[in-house]
Figure (cartoon, rainbow over the protein chains, first blue to last red):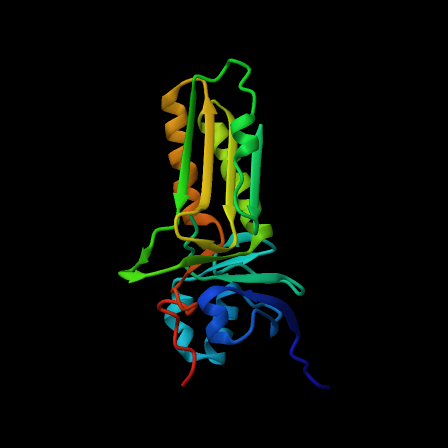
Length: 88
Length: 140
């Protein structure tokens, strides 16, 4: 019997400095089926360790609503990583 | 009545100013957020605003609803420009009309503060040579 790791895929949107650091504005990230927003942030840190301080002060939004980092992510979610805003 | 736009066109408040007040509004408070000529000590030519427009409009619409729940305001207008806004031009406009000045001032202040705190909008300062001011170093 084989054991398969169940994964979900979320679409990530990045803006401003975060996009500059990551070099892409949207991409998909595979995560374990029980992944949370915090797990996604950890996955992003592994892509570019330099963005850790920026991720520490960023917020998450799922399907255009702000969420806490412990939110459980679902397959197909659109997750926006929102660095400190500066409108107005 | 609520007017709400996040737009890449220059802000136009003509319709807002022309709006009939039905004689019920004793106060009309307007905030005009203008682009200053310096940013963090550096001389600039413009600010470039990047928005996640669908979410920004959703957030601002909710803030307007919260405003209406807290104060008896009659008319609200919020406009934020995206893209490049030259020095001296409008980047954000918030207008509030109410029966009395206290709720109009309070509601306008609340909206401006919360939009700046919550809306997914980011600014980048652009110098006269077209280069970004204080751009992050993304190499190495």
